[in-house]
Length: 125
Image (cartoon, rainbow, N blue to C red; front, top):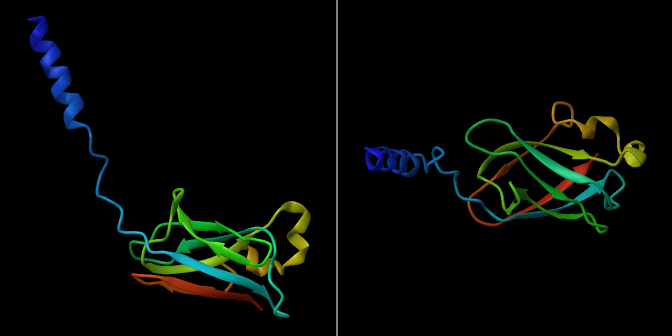
């Protein structure tokens, strides 16, 4: 009888290995963030919120030259789809960028990530 219960527990554990449908493929996404006067934004994080479809939230750290590379759940790339874009800034730098660009609802910036390589210019103007 003990071996029956042991086999039942093993069967249950093996059957619980899947956590749902697989995420769509990630596409390489890099780009540059510039301010209204054309200078690069040299700090913060750029965030992409899905605007519909099967897209997944992604983000990338903005480097000193304004460049970024997106990651989804710590994997490089983003799923294809439409996104609303905004920047997240350190508290001591929030006045460096107009407040509207710090929220996906207000930024007015929308992009579409396509299958394959993506190179984006995000202008905060």
